[in-house]
Length: 292
Image 1 (cartoon, one colour):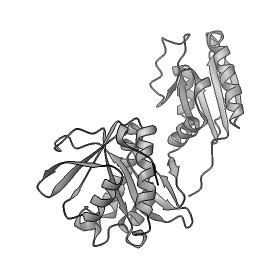
Image 2 (cartoon, helix red, strand yellow; image 1 turned 30 degrees about the horizontal axis):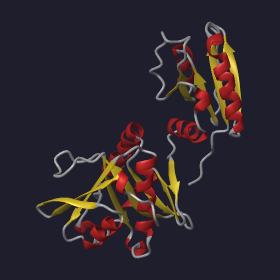
Image 3 (spheres, one colour; image 1 turned 180 degrees about the horizontal axis):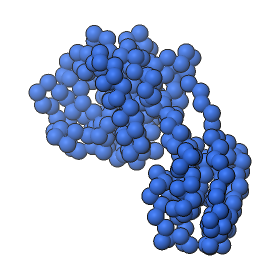
Image 4 (spheres, one colour; image 1 turned 90 degrees about the vertical axis):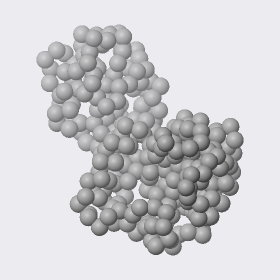
């Protein structure tokens, strides 16, 4: 799935306090140009209207007035908090930057993608791309749940309208609020959905030590036995520790699911509890070694 990419990053600064943040914003513009973006800085006088926004631009503004002018026509934007605008309410912005000169390229791209309702690419492995789900993935998601998978996991229902709403709500709420979730695993060669792997909120009633997140995975039947689970799970566990800041990751599986038990143990997950027909595991960051 190909999408247009952000090409421009533009600052809009209120004239009344721009001098306080101008050195910092000017440095950020130079940094963003170094990332390969077209970047500029505009000082906006009181009452001045902004030009129509461009689709491939991310706008950074430092007042409620400017944010409103960007929001109404559907611009991709974020707020800018600095010493001169401390009285401003920037709540219109989902993201607010401080010291923008230190913001990396990937973060700017992801802010723009979130504003454009486009999926984030999480990472790539030798054979797979991991990205956020989109509503159009629903039918492909159903294909993951073969007879073996539904022994351990609940498959989506046949009510397409209902399941689409559930998926859209998940995309909007979980990804946006948490920055993580269960993600789509695609073949880099064919682009087809071959699995879903990722993290979820831990079950507070689960026995054993409380993890920061719970890990789970499902690989499509015709892709099992090819090392995909090990390849992608290892990369995402490393991502959870190094990028998401987890210190302890949990997992659970049915006692009868010997294949999952073997894979989890191969990563260093330790069984810490059993309840009814489930095993519960923990993997601590200081016990993890990223080896494929």
